[in-house]
Image (cartoon, rainbow, N blue to C red; front, side, top):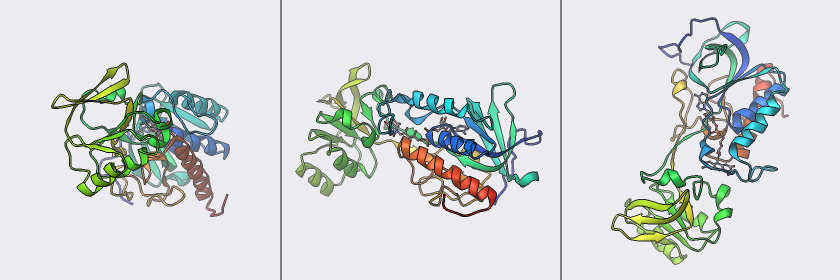
Length: 326
Ligand SMILES: Cc1cc2nc3c(=O)[nH]c(=O)nc-3n(C[C@H](O)[C@H](O)[C@H](O)COP(=O)(O)OP(=O)(O)OC[C@H]3O[C@@H](n4cnc5c(N)ncnc54)[C@H](O)[C@@H]3O)c2cc1C
């Protein structure tokens, strides 16, 4: 284990102490908090309150909650947590640093917390830490893309393609997996155009295969999208030509934002997600990860929630020092 040369802010202050600090209050963190609460663990759930899916109005594919607004799902989960006094929520609060530091009563980490609400602890000693901070997305640099993202342009086919089926769709991206994603999206429509935005990410063999299955490849650069109040109507190319569409998908670049972990030498995959075993354990004893921040990266709400629940059970087992199935 490594220790940061610079301790987290206020690391000298008297820390409060919990079994588990959960960093991030999306479906992964909330589900872990519920299950840890039920296992009588003392929990501090710290959430900055900036979910990845905030751009969209409806979430799909979550059993019993298909079509629920993203914030409603969080609200329901937080209401359930209120029944567990051993779970505390630090809302609109950010974890800014974590140190590996053995302390009394089996604590192994010092967690620096930055929140505006009076009474929010600034340093917390924890026996375990669960990272559930999700991802940050970078979209291709198309001026008004954000105005349509989550409304009629999406990134997750499994989540949102049903509502767009059989329409004229665009797939916009600049990453090497674009042809593969086009074949996936073609499951929902036979009117698909792939826009590489001037990049060479689709090779000539892939283009021939896509063309043979009725998918058009457009290599010219995009000037912007056109439409009204979130409803996209066309892709405008830099030479002025317009390609009319009714919706589409974009391939973002995803990055986990784990700056607060610079003091902890946990293994990552090639894209920076925390490497975990099948139970959410990272390479650092006592540090766990669940949801989109854990390898292999972006998934779905119900997958993140499932990973959070599984990590909670494993954390409890590890705290007690037993290795059993559930
Ligand atoms: C536009 C869009 C639409 C989507 N639609 C669907 C859908 O319909 N169905 C579906 O299943 N999935 C959908 N997804 C994917 C889904 O949103 C994610 O898979 C899911 O939210 C991942 O959950 P998570 O708990 O890992 O992370 P998140 O939900 O992103 O939550 C992470 C939380 O951690 C907080 N955080 C980050 N850093 C810190 C820190 N240092 N300290 C404290 N808190 C921190 C963030 O503010 C955030 O609240 C969509 C995604 C996008 C972008």
